[in-house]
Image (cartoon, rainbow, N blue to C red; front, top):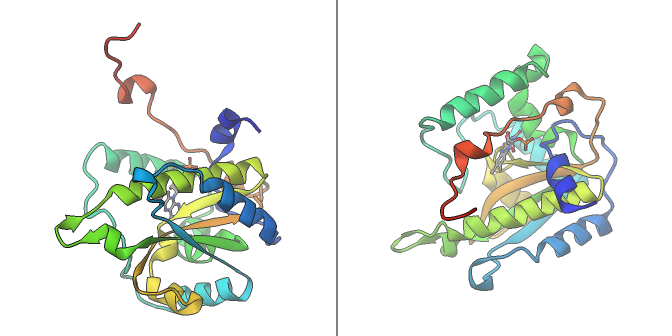
Length: 222
Ligand SMILES: Cc1cc2nc3c(=O)[nH]c(=O)nc-3n(C[C@H](O)[C@H](O)[C@H](O)COP(=O)(O)O)c2cc1C
């Protein structure tokens, strides 16, 4: 699959088939994604990949938590100023038309169940590289964004679906305990990965993008 096709075909998948993803494919995707760029080649990422009983243990822990406050280790946005709030509302309004009322209400639970995906790739970042004595170093998050997108594009090219999930790291303590992840690694993001269920109506939803002339300005070019 060429890169432009992979970019266009990747979409957030929110209904997966239970079929497991072979371990060698997961290893291939992550090892190829390691070629993503990073500040001075610092490669500030590590991955913990869970499936089977381990993933179920995490999901059960999340679902039974009964606690609505997220404990994410990478702070969530405190505010969504314009134009971001309007884009978010636009997404939710359109997305809702691709879901039943029950699915819309159950989004949090579905997130915690990784939308039925058989595996989740957890992104880890060294805590001391992000939270530093003089302030927060945001640069490793750029690097991690590029490795995450590379993983998702490679997955698309191997016929797999993905969805990046902030919700998958809502309760890092649960993941840490099940996967034995040390405190000095931040649990930054989860990427649910598996085979798409393209019969599911919610996977037929495609998000929009702003037009080029609204977001890019070109100077001194012909
Ligand atoms: C950092 C990040 C966190 C996200 N967290 C979630 C999440 O917790 N749950 C979810 O369903 N989608 C999540 N998404 C997916 C976005 O909603 C999605 O990428 C966006 O709406 C654009 O749609 P597309 O991926 O289909 O192009 C996340 C995406 C990113 C990049």
